[in-house]
Length: 368
Image (cartoon, rainbow, N blue to C red):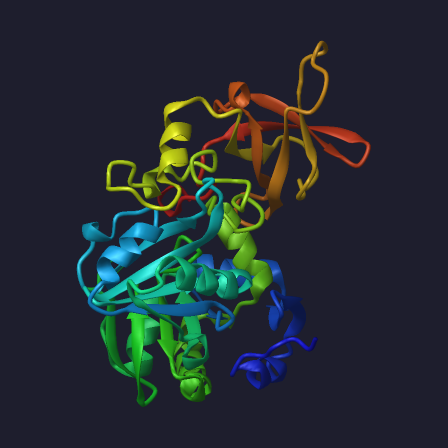
């Protein structure tokens, strides 16, 4: 089966992007290099094509209660024009997907899903909300462009004449961008100031070019999936299929704050309440290398004690941090090894390399 392409595919080709197949899409993994693109976002401004993400609309008179029944967070905590991070879970407490839900009104919500899960979330919502609300896959109606970094809001203002400085994080507006109505939200996956723009795919190239031109004096760079991953790892953000999944739920992944255990019953609530009340066998932690090497997915962790036998955990995601200049990872370890400062060893090929458990995020702008 051929991979899908976004409305900006030819733009990426002109920029010399290197492509990879990701979740059935041909996506740019890098343009000039992962580290250079990563640092552009940390220092100045980066622009991303994230049109592979999915958008699913839940609407109708019963939409608010319907959405409340299928998400872990509490939709009543936000008002119109706000959005929230949440998870959609199975009855067994596994994760169908983690999403951003946009509340346009009490009768209109938009789920932004991971590309790999768009269809499964759509089918899940159709099944669970049958007769309670209308569920429509709107993914084909939107391209999505993210602009992230300290200069991003200024670049957006130069490009479109819209001042988004007064929009608080996890708020959004619906306004004209590149000649079409768009959703512009103060959200992102990098830990920096930034915006995500949802607009008609036919206007995506015009919006991209306007942002690139406006950012010319602000160090703007096109950023691929490679740096998107290193940026999210420095923030300790989970990725579906690595830190969370159908067997890895929100409690053990450290996402309890996004599970409204006190609200009325929702799908998976019984299991999640029980897990929250008990000690999990393993938990997700940050790992920082103390020796040379980069921890990669699946590498085993050992407790550095002579009498210790057997692995005490494994790496879910790892990389070399361009800011910290050392290897970092997210990993599941036994609960007894979760405290920051605990010294472990990661097996990199045949070498046992020292590392330690640390809190996340690994990167904080105010401490840089």
